[in-house]
Amino acid sequence: MDQLALLFVLLLGAVVSVPVGDRLGLPAPVLMTVFGIVLALLEFVPNVEVPPDLILPALLPPLLYAAVRRTSWRQFAANKRPIFLLAVALVFVTTAAVAAVAHTVVAGLPIAAAVALGALVAPPDPVAATAVAGRLGLPRRLVSILEGEGLFNDVTAIVLYHIAISAVVSGTFSAPEAALDLVLSAVVAVAVGVVLGWVANRLMSLLDDATLQIGLTLLVPYGSYVLAEELHGSGVLAVLTTALFLAEYASDADDVLTRLAGHTFWDVVDTLITGVAFGLIGLELHIALRTASGRWGEMLGLAAAVVAVVVFVRLAWLLPATWLARRMHRKRDQDEEIPTTWRETVVMWWSGMRGVASVALVLAIPLETDDGAPFPHREEIVFIAFGVIMTTLLLQGLTLPWLVKRLGVQADSESEKEFEKQLALRAARAAKQRFHEIEKDEELPEDLAEQLRRRALDIGLRISPDIGEEERREAHRQRVKQIRKIRRIQGEMLSAARHEVLAARSEPGSDPEIVDRVLRHLDVRSLR
Image (tube, rainbow, N blue to C red; front, side, top):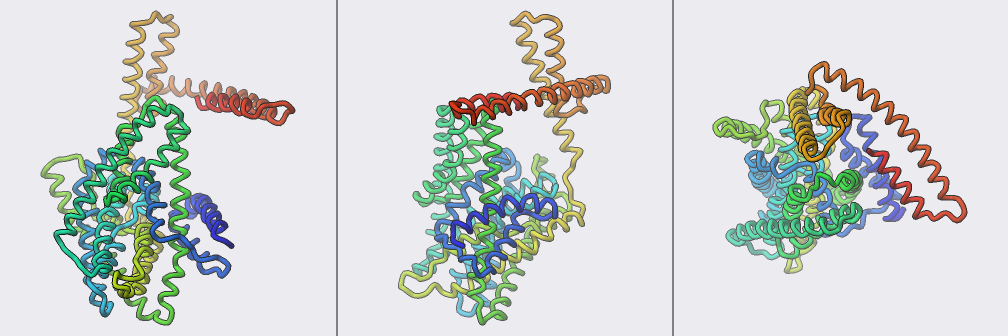
């Protein structure tokens, strides 16, 4: 098997792992990690030959962009306090704790190298958190905080990692310069993200074609990441800023086709790249196995010590941090999404899985320092990092569904239904108001006007049937039955039309482009 065949196997596994995971009640990313481990143990499967410095820029931009599309700037603003406590403060605390323990248990490990280890295992993976927690029916506030933590903690951890690696490689360190680098990295990233978001928004309005617009959205996160890195900014923060800008300003309510096609496209990209990323994590197991050859007892002991620190520091931090966030929430009476019970806090604790970013960072550790000496204790750092990644991904990822069920942490379906009902009412009122405006300007026959009035209400009823009185709901149900019958018959008619047009594609003298154009018109008509 060569590298290309291995990539195809990973892509196929990414597709198959989703329905298999749904059937087994297990997260697809965790299944892909297990699949990668199985592949790594097979003799005929080659070692992955991806340059470490390409893993982050190749995988993170589209994954982060896809994750941000599911949220909004308003959610980040509402959760800024808990996200700060998790994404910034907890990363610093975890890095410091891991560095202290690693410096103690690994004889001769320099403090800067220990900080690098702490930084690369500190950030929970945003993709794992979203993919795992988002499918378990958790309260939306928990998913929002986990998404925000996962998206922003990489920024802090990657900057800390680069500062520590630079100190080890060069042999010098300056705290003021490190702090300045941290601030400048963030400023440059935000500036690049906003500028590129504005440019992309303008380009989308000029392209006026769904295919080109969606293609541009694939290029934008890569461009944002690369440009920010070239200017010594944080590529991850730049991608987040660009994605949030576009989510806020680049959405055209009437561009239905682009929105539907865009959602489908990014769902496909997210599924495939997530699967490949977590498959690569499993495939890189051979590095840890080779590192521990002949030293299993010692290496497993070192890894276990750091795993314990990573897992329990998160719990020790979450308990007081959540309590503090709740107290500040009550005092300021803000609409902030925070864990409300100890059960939700425990679920947040157990959702701290490490993943793609940690793997990329550990693989990117240099082999030598500037003076030609080997990077100090690189083998121990690599094994410990993989121990943390595998333990958190497999142990926590496989048991999180059981824990959520055991603790009974579920979304508040009543409040979600109420919010959906409010949106349905707003949609119906907006449609009705617009109809009255049109009715004043145009003379409509009474039967047509009455039909349109009913349809204005139906817009909301189709979203949430609870918004109408019982009489209206019953009338709506009867109309829905009739509409479904009409749509079923119309669907069969359109199906017959599509079959006939498709059959013409293989007839002599038939132009495939014209056939496809007519078929596309029929397909779009079927969506209405």
